[in-house]
Length: 343
Picture: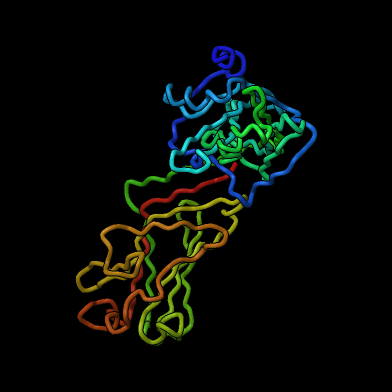
């Protein structure tokens, strides 16, 4: 019987690379529907003989699942994988999980969206327990397997009164309904420079500026338009009258067509005109950073900066050299830029 089990009903017993069924893509309890059906599966049925020997067989071979032969459904090729998870401390002796693996060779970015349901035959009553994933799953190069953990406990299956085993034989099946096959990808052109790209904005008569936002002329780097903005006395009630606020904004929203995103590595600073160096703020508003700040821009995030760039008391101190001749010099330095363009 063991030979028959191996040669006729299991195409291969394969080692799974992960240590947990959950990591392969498992539906949560809220995404699963269980019901009984009279009709069997449309696409594939696997008859497993010598079922009671599976646990010992897998344990002896160091494996944890059996894999069906390949079958076709919805224009794709699949295999069914049965995972036998024995747990000595579990009153139910562990669980049986069922997974579906897409065998088609996909291209990078290609996705197959499919819904599936697993069948376990009640051989006494002549019907089927159906365990169904109620939302579509995306199969890809990175995640080619989806399934349902803990379909039944081992005790439930081995209890012959439940009808799942008759003459030491169990029948499972699957239906797969691929909804669509699509190709999603992007290009990531990294713009590298031998020297950083810098924009300098000189703000004259700083002490006479109103409280409202002041915006720089629009400037362009690598074909993308930006602007700087300041609030001379802070941009909100929490920092009003205490801090200089500085922001910069992406002006050309057309670059976000089709969900595109832009990543920049930058430094934002004000110039110490006495010593010819700069004061910078880090991403977390701490002391001047050692490295440039990294930030993503997209259609919902077009502006970035600091409400508390520098206390006004430090800014106006003549010892610091930030307001020589009542002029403030702001610099933004683009050290790298990366655009993700969906195609």
